[in-house]
Amino acid sequence: MGTVGWTSAGRAVFQGRYKKVRLNKLMDLFIREYVICDVCGRPHTRLVKEKGRWIKICDACGAWRVVEKI
Image (cartoon, rainbow, N blue to C red):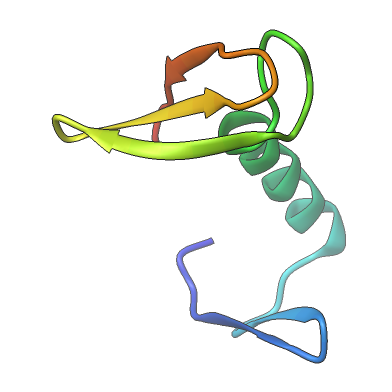
C-alpha cells in the first residue's frame, strides 16, 4: 500500500482511502508469504534475517524458506 498506518483500539488504521477488496487481497498475500508455513500450514513462524535475506522458519515443523518482497 505504501502508506502510513497504526493500530488503535485493536484496529489497523491506514492513511488514505482503500477499498475493502484491495485490503483483503493484500492482507491475504502478506499472511501467505510471511506468516503461514508452506509445509504444515500453521501460523507458528518467525522471520530471521541472515546475510541480508529474510527467512521464514516454522517452529511447528521446522521447515524454512527465504521470503520474497511483496
